[in-house]
Image 1 (cartoon, rainbow, N blue to C red):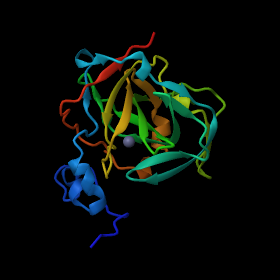
Image 2 (image 1 turned 120 degrees about the vertical axis):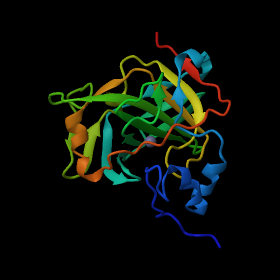
Image 3 (image 1 turned 45 degrees about the horizontal axis):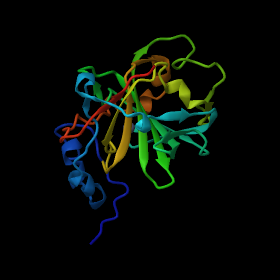
Image 4 (image 1 turned 60 degrees about the vertical axis):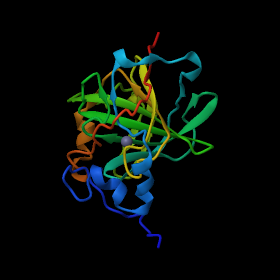
Amino acid sequence: MIKRNLDVVWNYEEDSEIGPERWHLLCDRFKPGGEYPLQSPIHLQKNASLILPEKEQLTIHYQKQKFTEKEFKNTIHFVPFDQLSHCVYQGEKYFLTDIHFHMPSEHILDDYQAPLEFHLVHTSKKQVNLVLGVLFQTARLTNQICHDHGDEIWDFDHHIQWFNPDIFLPVQQSYFHYVGSLTTPPTIGPIQWFVFDEIGQMNQNFIDLFKNELLLKNNRPIQALNGRKIYYHQAE
Ligand SMILES: [Zn+2]
């Protein structure tokens, strides 16, 4: 019998019956993740990385657009209304479909785990996913989310926001690239991961807006490399 299991509950607690070690056992839909060897997140180390070939480099084409914010899968998501902002990777367009975050960071960069990691999720016409990861420290900043362009609209009462998603991107765009998985159930892949090297500064006041809806911790533990090659691109 195939179980209908779109509402299967899971969490991030280590010793829980529904924690990360057991996600793939919770239902049929989560099962393939347990069999997919290239899992995320991983520990990214610059001195163990290869140079990313030029034809594999990413170009980012973001623009100001309309989002709605909602809570699901143990975090807050900003979901664009239209497919406008996109990346190009190996000649293929990947449109931005979701922005969400994890606390603390899921990826570890050269032994450093940041307090926060944003994921900008993209999807191609062929339904392949590409995710940009950006790690942040948090600080009390006056009147800005990260590096502020000044013309965003953040209407949390009506759950409508207008912003250019590049506000989440670092200035210095050096990044790691590897092939991995979703970090939430069903943890399937392949996902083209690009994780920026620069640690951003996020306004703690912005994160506090969601405090009542969030768990204290929503990061999946580090996964084995399983022989994977990690690439690094140094911005010029
Ligand atoms: Zn994520």
